[in-house]
Structures are given as C-alpha cells and as structure tokens.
Length: 253
Image 1 (tube, rainbow, N blue to C red):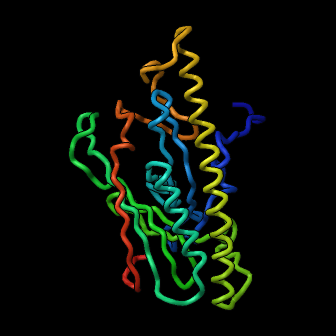
Image 2 (image 1 turned 45 degrees about the vertical axis):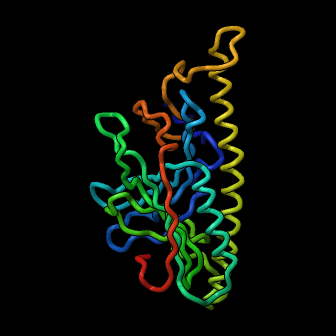
Image 3 (image 1 turned 90 degrees about the horizontal axis):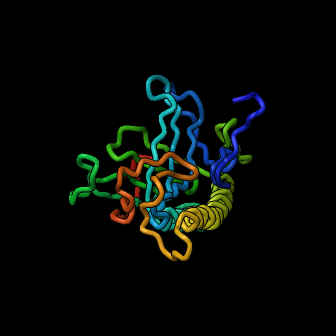
C-alpha cells in the first residue's frame, strides 16, 4: 500500500467521527474506548445480513486493542436506539434506569448450529444522573462494563461545558438524541443500500432469463466488516432477544 492510499469507509457509519467515546479506563486504558455501529452483509444470502454494536476498549497488554461486537438483526439495534432516545427525553432527577437486550443464538458445534441457545452478548441502555448511555456486554462478562455517553470525544474525557449537574445532564441528553436519530437514519439507509447491492450482484450471476437464485452462487463475505458465516447463513434469524427493565442503584455501570 502506497503512502497515498487512504482508508475509505464502506458505509457512512464506518467512521470514528460517528463513534461514541467513553472515559479512558483508569490505570489499564491506553486510549478512550470507542463504540461503533457496524453493518455486515451476507453476500451469499443478503436477506440474512446483520447489524452490530462493537466496542474497542484499548486495554493495556495482551488485549490492548480488543474489539468485541454483538451481532444481531437491525431491528434490535433500532430498538436500543429508540430506548436511548426515550431516556434522553426524561427530565433530570429520578431513579437510575436500565434496559437490557439479551441476545441468544444457537451454539455452534463442529461448525454447525445446534438446538442449544447460548447468550452471545447484551446491549444495555441506561440512564444515570449523568444522562442516558448505551453499552455492549461480552457474552461471558470478561471485559469491564463501559457506559458510552454522547457528548464525549476522543481527545477529552468530558466536553460538557457546564459544572451544574442539571445543565450537564441536559447537554448529554441533547447529544444522545442527535446521535441516536442520526444513527437510526443512517443504519436504515446504508443497510438497505448495501443489501440491495448484494442482491444486484447475485442477480447478475444468474443465467439469462433467470429471476431467482438459490443463495449458493456466491461465497460468503461482507461489506463493511469481517464475516465468517461458517455455513450458518441464517444465524441471526435463529436468535432470540429478551428485553428486561430494572431501576435503582443495583446495576454495574
């Protein structure tokens, strides 16, 4: 790669400029953690494409740039974004609140889906005295729980211009509304664009006069992310999502 080559994002969400940031982890963090929305198009069967929330924690040591993501149906990401907007519209004060979207999928055994369902990750949306936040939790809880509040950026721990708690809260709420609305719109538009592109490519591979495809004409792959289908092209369709609510001070964020 020449020095003139630059990274070109595959879709509008694939950019650190659109990411959410959190405060650097004390002592073990090397940079501000990042949360991004991903799109993964199944080139063999575009109808089984997925969206994701992925976090980069930047932990010093072996896992310093460890990225993990929760892959699911786009509607689950959209539900989490709607919950974030709902919390962002609530006034300052009141109880801490939390909604958890627990995602379970078939356990992979010898490269194939089994009947057993296991937790593959969690999307968490909450509200504290700081404002609304969103997070992803690893399936075995091996990484720190990080709350991503809108209004933080890569360079600064806090960009909030006010020392007054209520004004600070309102600032985070306004930032969360803007981020969630923009993300929701971009996810809808870009997911449809990339999925249609994959369908068009499959149609182009069909014999003249053909008006359908079996889904096996193309090898598995992705636009906008790494993809390892393992012949489980409909994995996301086999997922179940459980939504639970809690309030008070008992949650670990």
